[in-house]
Image (cartoon, rainbow, N blue to C red):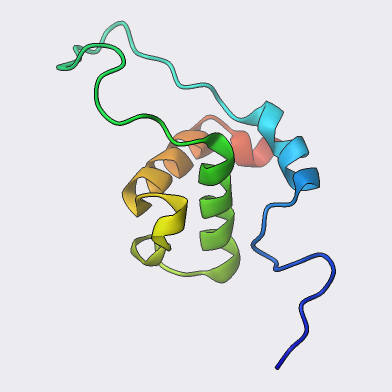
Length: 95
């Protein structure tokens, strides 16, 4: 059996990494041009940004498919949507 280092697993989001990433996460905005079928606040609640970031880091570090993401991170389709949104906003380049 292998020993886990003091730093933890390579896919774990440490408090230090989160402190660097959190201020850079883009805020979601509702488009004024888009017509929404539901009222503001309707539908599923947004996921916690740290949980989303942890899911993204897990996929990128382990190279698993998005669909194979463990449910503890949330729905894989939701995590992937956040990834696409944050990528377009330049989050990963800024990080």
